[in-house]
Amino acid sequence: MGRQGQHPISDVPAAGDRGAPALSVDHLSKRFGDRMAFEDVSFEVGRGEVFGFLGPNGAGKTTIVRTLGTLLTPTRGTATVVGIPLTPENGAEIRRRIAIMPESPGLYLRLSVVENLECFADLYEVSGSSERIERALGAVDLLDRADDACGSLSKGLRQRVALARALLSDPEVLFLDEPTAGLDPVAARDVHDLIESLRQRGVTIFLTTHRLEEAERLCDRVAILNTTLRTIGPPDELRGRLFSSALTIRTLGALSEPGRIFAGLAAVTGWSQDGPASYVIAVSDPAVAAPALTRALVAAGADVLSIGEVHHSLEDVYLELIDEQGDGRP
Amino acid sequence: MRLSTRRIGAIFRKELREYRRNRSVVAGMAILPLVYIIQPLVAVFALASSASSSLAHEHVLLYMLGIPALVPVFVAAYAVVGERQQGTLEPALTTPITREEFLLGKALAALVPSLGVAYAVYAIFLGLVLRFAQPSVASALIQGPDLIAQVLFTPLIATWSIWVGIAISARSSDARVAQQLGVLASVPPVLVTVLIALNVIEATLALAIGLAVVLLALDGLGWWVTSGMFDRERLITGHRSA
Image 1: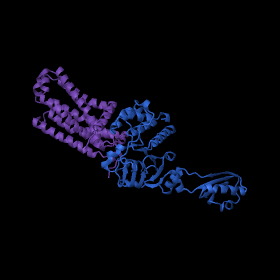
Image 2: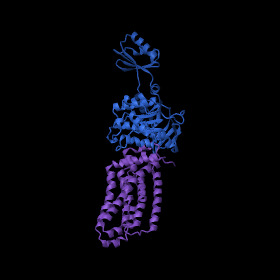
Image 3: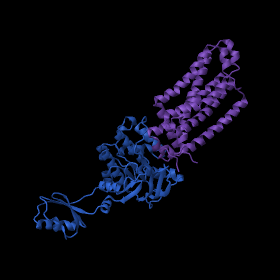
Image 4: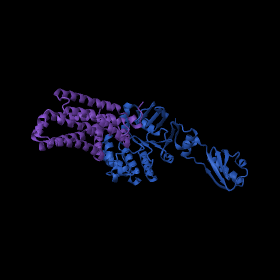
C-alpha cells in the first residue's frame, strides 16, 4: 500500500447536518452485569478530525466503539453520531453512514477478496458497486489480489482488505479499532499513510490504539480512557497541562555551587540534579531561561556540554495518567 | 418494516458460496440423503410382487419427509454461531442490515439447497423404483396423494427445521454443539413422518390439512421467535442488552 499505489476513493457524501459534530457523547456509561465497561464519558469529535482513543486493555475503548456503532445499548447517557441521536430506532441509519473496522478483520476466509467486498457493498446498498470495490482495492493497493481467497492472505493483507471493506460505503465517520495491532512496521506505516490520505479527504476518524507514537503522529486530539475519561486534548496541550517546562544542562564536571548559579535567574522556578554533572531546571519560559542560564554558567566558569529542552512524549502523558490514577478497573 | 432484498440477497449469496467451499457442509448435506435413499431402495428392490397388496395400505414415501427435517438443520445450526466463532458476525452486524434481513438471508440459504437435495432424492428414488422395482410394487408404492404431500410438506418442514436450527445457533457458543442439538430437535418431526409412513398414525386428508396449517403457523412463529432471540449485544459480548 505504498503512496504511489493509492487512489482516491471519492468525496465524502454530504451529511444531513454538516454543522453538528461528527460525534457528541454526553455522560455515556455502559455496564455489563457487575462490571462497568466505561463510565460517565463525555466528548465531542469534530467533522474531519482524527481523534485518538488511548487506554490500557479493558479500559473500555472497544466497548465505546461498539456502543457508538449501535451494536451495544448504553446503560446511561446520550450521544449523537453524525448528528443522529443514538437510539435503537436510529441504528440502521447510523450504521449506513459510518463504518467500523474491528480489531480482528473478520473476513469470510473461503471467499475471495472481491467476493467479500461484493457482499459488503450489497449490505451497504452502495451504487456502482463494481467501481466502488475497484477504488477501495486501489486505495489499499490490493487490486492484484482481488481474486485470491482471503484465507490465503497474510495478516497484514487481511487487515488491508478489512480497511477496503470499511471504505466501501464512503463513511462519514470511520471507527478504526486497533488497526495496526499485530502488523509489522511496514504494514503499520501503510495503514498510517492511508489514514493520512483519509484525513486529507475530510473523513472523521475515530482511532483506538495502544501505539502512542501512532496516536501522536496521526491524531489531532487524543483522549485517555481507563473506564472513565482521564484527559482529552491535542497531544501538545496534554504535555503542557501535565508537565511544567524544563531544561536539561550537562556540564563537563559537577558544578561547585549550582544553587547559587541558578538562583534568581529569569524564568527559572527550581532545579534538581539528575546525575554527577547533569541538572534539570524547571522554567516558566524556556526561551527566556535558556540564554540566562547559558550566561550564568559561562560566568561561573562551567564547561557547558549541552542545554536542551526536556521533551515529554505522549507516552509520558499516558503513563503519568494511568499510573497516577491506578488501574481504575472494577 | 421495510426489508431490503439486496441485503437479504447478499447474505444468501455469501452463504451459498461458503457452503460450496466447505467440505463438511457438502458432506453433511449429501450423506444423510444417501442413507435415506439406499436402505429403502434395497428393501423395495427385494420385494416380490405379492408384497404390493400390503404396500398399498402404507405410505412409505412419506418416510422421506425426514430429509427436509434433518438436512437444513445441519446448516442452519451453523448459521449464527459459526459466524461468531469465525469473527465474521461483528463486521456484518456493523452494516445497516436488520436482524430480520440477516435471518431471512440465512434461512433462504439453508432452504434452497435443502429443497434441492430433498426433491432430487425423491426424483432419484421414484425414477429407480419405476425402473427397477417389480411393476406391481412400484404402482403400490407410488401413490398420488403421497407424492402431493411430499411436494407440499417438504418446504413447510424444512422451514420449521431451519428456524429451530437458527434459534439454537443464536443461543449457542459452539457450532458442533449447535448442530447436535439441531439434529436432536429434528427428531420429533422425523418421528411423526415415520409413524405416518408406517400407518401407525392414519394418513387422512384432514390430518394433512391440519398438519399443514400447524406447520405454516409454526414457520411464521419460528421467524418471529428467532428474530426476538437475535440480540446483537448478546451475540457480540455474551451479555443481554440493557
